[in-house]
Image (cartoon, rainbow, N blue to C red; front, side):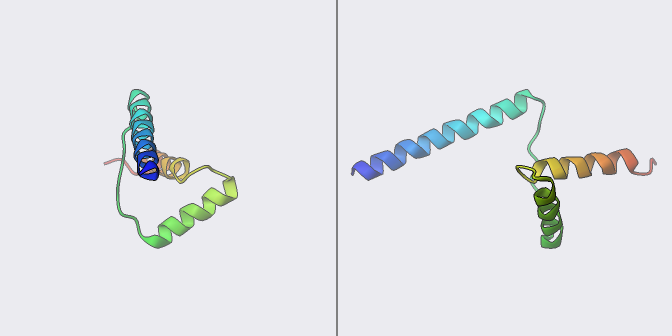
Length: 75
């Protein structure tokens, strides 16, 4: 019973932390983006992430999107 209570408290703490993180991201003008990506692209992103010592894929993906937008031909 005590273990269940501890697990419930931990789950509640995690939910609160996630909600706070999402609120901070929104306040900073950031929006969540979810999509499916081919595994070979993820492997390439992970390779770059490791080379640069990035904490996550996010900065690599953000940089790639910005580069594409800045260099894409204009219609």
